[in-house]
Length: 291
Ligand code: AG3
Image (tube, rainbow, N blue to C red; front, side, top):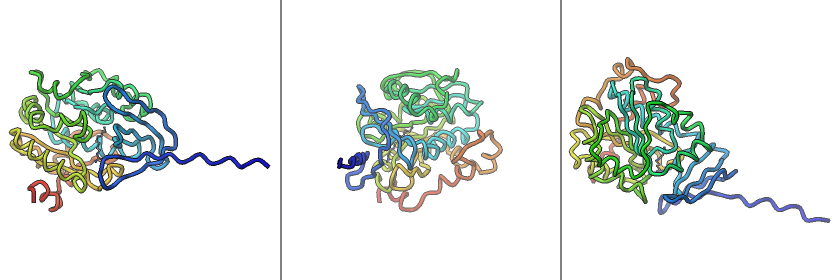
């Protein structure tokens, strides 16, 4: 009698982001795994979260929960601005942020500064729903290479700058410095808004505290943050930094927001979730104030 075939051992992706807490996702099928010149990229399928993209051992996005991140990162500042014509996306090579930005017809020009051209290529191929054709948009100009260098150039100004970065480990660290925020401020038009990925406060309190301090040090008159919740960014709320020289942009009333053009078919962003995102639990205020 022949031996029954042994079941394949289960393969798990174990995230390496936190020292004392780890999430694991079963890799039902690996679609792509490569070490590029810049980073280790993997895309796999998972029954719970759909297609998962991880860079250097950290989950960057999943097709099941990415809207909570991309919609809030993009629409909150664009709708608060009210007449954004030019938007710069720093990072964001998976195309999710770009997909949301192109939904705004008032936006005439989009520049995306991405380190790694390979990320865009393989995301288009393996996670096509993330960019959903947005890389073909005529308003877009792609700039490859170090986005911190790009921001440091003397160049055009934008109404909104969205920093869709990794955490401040490896190449992403340059996008969390005071110098970088200073350059962003210089590259904003009057009334412009900078929004930045600032980590999950419960497990990365230093990331929120430091980015708030540095954005203030960079000279912005109004520095704050807003919240979303992305299940595969473990630890609860995720913080998105908000910096502008115009404090009124952060305090737009819900009915004013609702009277503005808002793309249809959104799954997470509404004028109500926009306003609610600026409600800060006291423990987060303490993190920012260093208590
Ligand atoms: N970049 C943000 C990843 C944050 C991971 N951090 C964490 N889980 N604490 C996402 C890129 C999506 N376009």
